[in-house]
Image (tube, rainbow, N blue to C red; front, side, top):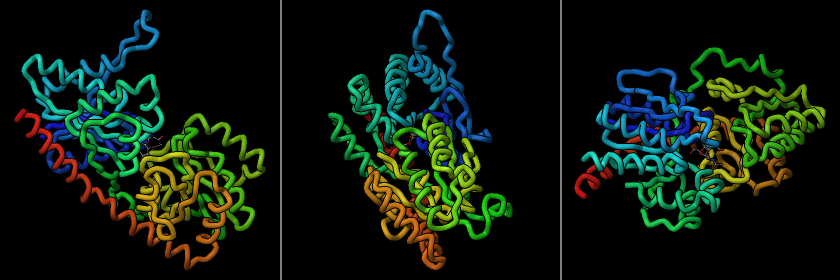
Length: 378
Ligand code: GMT
């Protein structure tokens, strides 16, 4: 099958999932065309089955806002025609589903029929999409998609609650390439980051408000008062500077490392003992799954889809958003006893196996085949 994938190319779960999906589909013999404004961050190598087409938006002074949707839908029309793409899979409803629908209609005029699969990722529904400014367009795009998937049961429920959806929503959870998280590289350089007696605690995100970054730091602050520990903060975003200030205010700068964005999170996770994700809302929590795949237990909030990923008392612990005290107690209960820590590490790894890409990517293939045949019959 020739599949066009539209996603955000930046560091963020939806772009990562879209990229990993495209790469795996290419290994399974499909021809994948990524169509976006920049080469996706996890797309390092192009090959005979993996292509990247950049969407250019020419700056024109008349426009206060440059019309990306228009440029994207035109590019989709051109690429579908040029590469004879069979199906478009768009990740994140805004504005991708909307642009894909416009492309579909333009192509129809030329006698070309192409179905659209839309995957909802979270903030496109819970934070941005449901805003009255966007809601009618998002509802329309979801209802006009030929198939709709969401990354968790929780996100499906939120979508049905917030929008007037007439389409069926199929849940296809996010997945992980277990092989990429095998500690098979020799350079797991724990000793460079911490002393032997120090536990390493990690947080990875795009440092947006929704991630509750101050809670990460407060939980860590409490932990390091009890046991020797270091905190690795990985990612970039608007909450990073306030986080650096808070760390300084609390007098723990020597115990916290800010990494910035990284394409090698497996190398950071390989020496981590615990992962913190106290988010306000999280449709799935791909970062938590990546941690678990590296054998790192997770202390998270219980919001959104996190309970579908992190199993309370098994792969880590779940607490209500903002319950810093409980998160601290739970973290210490794991870290204080080596036997308990080892058991949680093994459990985290085994829980992550439920999201093995070899089991989940075929679910998308089934959806593609059905969507294509249903659409062409119509
Ligand atoms: O978490 C973010 O702010 C980024 C966002 C995105 O769209 O890339 O992540 C969302 O999609 C991920 C992949 O499906 C999920 O793992 C994240 O939980 C979800 N984020 C939120 O719901 C806040």
